[in-house]
Amino acid sequence: MKIQNLSIIFLVITIPLIMILTYYLNLQRDTLELQAQYDAKLSEATKEGIKAFEVNTVDWSDNINPEATRRTVTATVNAFMTSLSNNLNISGTAKEFMENYIPAIAVTMYDGYYIYAPTYTPITKENTDGVQLFYNETTRFSYNKFRKWKSFI
Image (cartoon, rainbow, N blue to C red; front, side, top):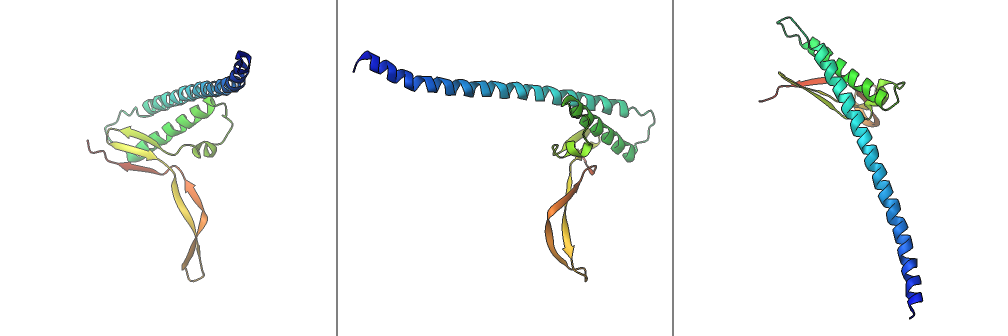
């Protein structure tokens, strides 16, 4: 074989390989840049949620009210979701739209921690006697169900 034939075979093999690897590396770079942007937006929303928590927890009285604590946690979660939607440039959307993409939020406090997560309740069908016939495939879920667990520290 002549050197010219070997060079043509080399170019036929290496040119597509170089093009494919270049495309793959550009795709990886774009993915990492987008991930860094999302991490920055999530960090900013978390900082604003913490600021809202600090502002709402200023209580000069000595009594501890569980309802006030839940309102504080609710205000913190609302500030977090509002800030996140503003950072993602979807500030006109409803809170329910954002809740579909957030599986859980944990707020740690001195007396324990609160978990903000959806509560899934299956829809059941019953006959006229009140006997449950089957579960419907669709489920309803609701947020704003806070459960408090004591930490064992």
